[in-house]
Length: 242
Image (tube, helix red, strand yellow):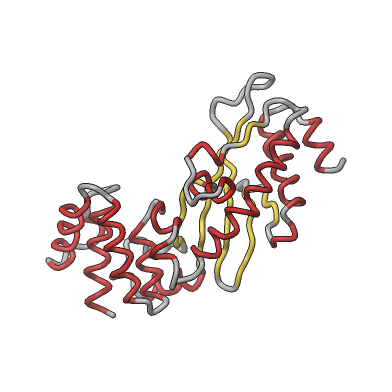
């Protein structure tokens, strides 16, 4: 069957989401994205970068009652992973290739004439078989208008520091490591100033991270999950070493 017919015929929530992914892979093929079923994502390669859109089915999905899927954006870089391997003492993610990522909804605002979007704006309701294709067509149009420019900004080391991707990434320290790997030290300062201005209460935790770095503590001794402290540690390490 064609992706459109599979989309209509699917019953089990997982099968519905897979059919939606196949439909999106076909609809967005002209942009370079393809459907990868395990784990469920849309993906394209741009030089050493990988652009990903992860599909995350709701844990509340039930046959005949609810089928929704959330979406997550990631940019990954194999060259950054190699840089981290060589500079393990400078990295909080010594074996990873992640550059940045956040919920797709936060990148959706351009479709309504502004830069912002809400987390839920990236969710897709696939509950009603008769409405699935219409909802996916709306998502695909938003993707072309808003998400493709997001990937353009997130893939440019001269633009990411002041981008939506930079503002909402779930791992700021990973972003500054990427800037260091691309010899963009000045952009690190731009990004840090913007991050601290946008994040109330982050300054003290950022300074704590810097102090731990300057005292010779490793990243394993940072407060788990504190992005501001991680960022301070990373910036101190990177700016001393570049």
